[in-house]
Length: 190
Image 1 (tube, one colour):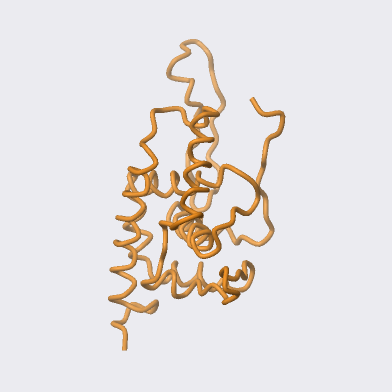
Image 2 (cartoon, rainbow, N blue to C red):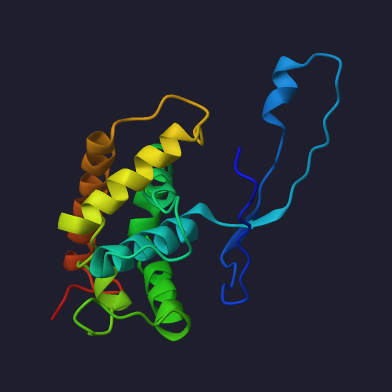
């Protein structure tokens, strides 16, 4: 195990929209006679998490650089898990939420692509989302994903890197299809 743990906290997130979610210990079902505490904290909704992660991935695809060290491939893994749990379709359909995330990130997470152009979050959430990097960025992502597997970060068997990217490609196409058929106010594009 590494001698360091990364905790991510930030004052730039709104945490909205949120909901109450039950939290239970995964080991409870396997350890009869032991009582584990349960909680029902207020947490950011999974649909917001989808757009936060999808736009972070979009930035990586435009820059080819990991921010904040290794294990950034977790975002691709998380997006596919959100999709498998049924949250992606709801997130994509929520055009007001997509716009809210784009507005927020445009103020607090200003980023530039490799050529120095500002990354347009509004374009990302309205038909221009990129979840699959190319060339050198793809090789960096593959190495980071393999490093996460080798370090035992996943509890269950995980898909191959190619399968992960195929899932992300499908999510990207789904998001971009909705984003190009409606603008962020739910109206057909002019």
